[in-house]
Image (cartoon, rainbow, N blue to C red; front, side, top):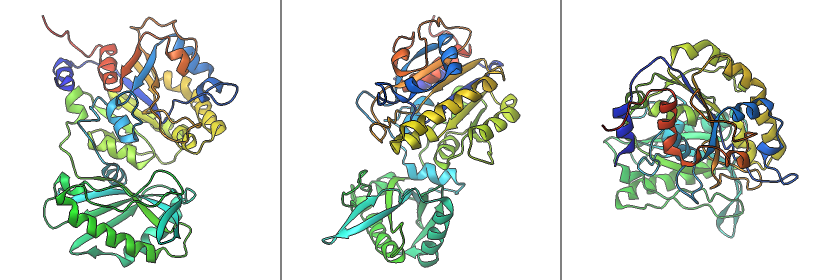
Length: 409
């Protein structure tokens, strides 16, 4: 049963406006005084809103699975993340404005620090100390000046943000998805050996050899640099994914600062709204200017996830509290439906994405409310939504916006 298709057939247009606010990696675990980041935060505005909202938690993929940001976002946008497995490379490339064709394989790269041990390449720092974007540009220029093509395949590389870049292998003929089925080289932890980009299908053998040659050259080019290697992730071709505005009959806009999230939004057909800076305040300024032009706004905040991955409990709290301070101004714009959640949990205790359900709040005139006293993991467990699948969030938002007709006679 294609639930998204059923929902699409029930959608009807009206004048209501929806905002989906995603604090990336929002969920946490108890650390200080047996409290999570949300529980330790001083969030009077979020807590007041939670008391007047439907609350619960969502599971982005299925129980026990720690999702990447791509699957996590696809889920809350209403796309089955198992059916639509989209590599991060494509999202990164689209997010920085690269034009991707059906002849391309897109790859997300991380600048990393490695060392050689007994002939093995071992990861010291998976992000090379989160090098600044300016350093990324310098290193990427160094690579692209030396590597133009390998075995007749054009090599395109562009810096994204901080330690992230996008790598494109452009072939002379159309590629297929099996060509992108290659082992990711990032071991996901430090002090482990870099994984060779071995093929997982026969079609991927040539691509694998090209990547091995590319990495050998990169290793020589970056010799002596702090960021002295590239880790490869998220190999992808362009999928034929249904477009969000057509599925949900919503004019949708994306306000985000990081390329990957803009890339995913662009892939599903949202309009990317330019933001000049990187702060929540700057994102809000843009929101005030454009919200009347859209039926649906996706508003993304990144740093909750970054600080969770760094294990920085206090700084993650700071971002949550910074958002809480600006929340009344967002609410003053008069959205008919306000949803606040994350794409996954990133507990600072674990320093990684985790399998834990993600706190969720939906505010509209059509809720019970008065079940959760705060917007926290434990309080959301008391809410009327219970624990739902992430893919069920969009139907709920449409229902609260009175944009879904009755199903059946």
